[in-house]
Length: 433
Image (cartoon, rainbow, N blue to C red; front, side, top):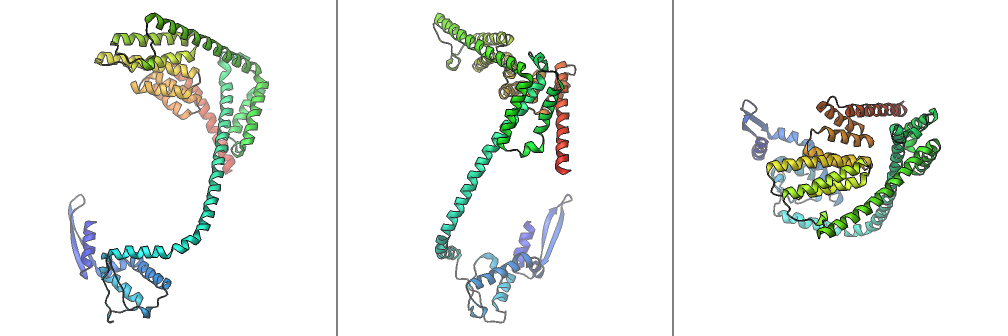
């Protein structure tokens, strides 16, 4: 490119020239670039000469100037020193080489800026006339923007309803082996209804339905499933209410116990304000105390308070200081266990975002941890991200080929993926015939 630039510069002064470019290619060969002014002119014909000619003619037309009235032409800028540019200007204004005509170069670049400002002043009246039209256009655009915003709200609500229907159907499918699964009907009507609703979710009718129609569908699904499996839904609702009452009672008892313990010790141990530089052994005792309490809570099915205890233990893990390499490894293993147990608690609470984050935190500490991969795959399965779930399961299977839990979840994911592909194929056939 540097050689081409140099050759172009030389041709502005000479009719032909040659430039040598050294060390080109793998063999470092010298290359000679030769060109004539005539060839350069031909290469520039379309992109430069024709456009320059059109620009001058348009300027003359707008200024209502005819060729015979032009007595002088002012040129400025390095590009106008090129002979064929000057020749083009002469041809347009009808001045040949034999005419007693010389280009004037008395103006500098400042004149261009000044001229542009004058053009702006001349156009001011036109711009004022355009204000009314511009304001009208802005009003139309604002109206369209508001309409699009309202449309976005409708689409978000529609997606939310669709996800609620899908989650409800998926829950009923997977509830057969749950605590109250025996209360689910075994009739073909129940299975067929789940299949039909699942198919509808991937149908053209669903895609084209309005938010109001999706609301009606969700209400119909809730009504029909209440009719078909009301006993199961009632049992699940009663259990959830019972757990809430138990947790509320336990929370009050725990708060009273903590207050009593603080009164006995003469201090208040609140993790957010505990900035004491405790010895490593003492801090680890606090971490393990919270962890063991959380393990007992999770064994009793008190997942909410278990998750809170695990979080408290992890908070204390951030308060170690001046650790030896051995102590750092010990803290790392404890944190790994806390993240894994937190993920389990959050899965049980159906807080999948929290569970996913806990799994990620665990994998940051040990990227080959089978339990972390399995639990993250569980989260992905419950959120219908089957491809990502299968990636984690394959990674876990590679590390633990005989893990039964991994194999079981793989089969469930495979089944859902096959079903999804079948639906996508059906949709494609409907769309493209």
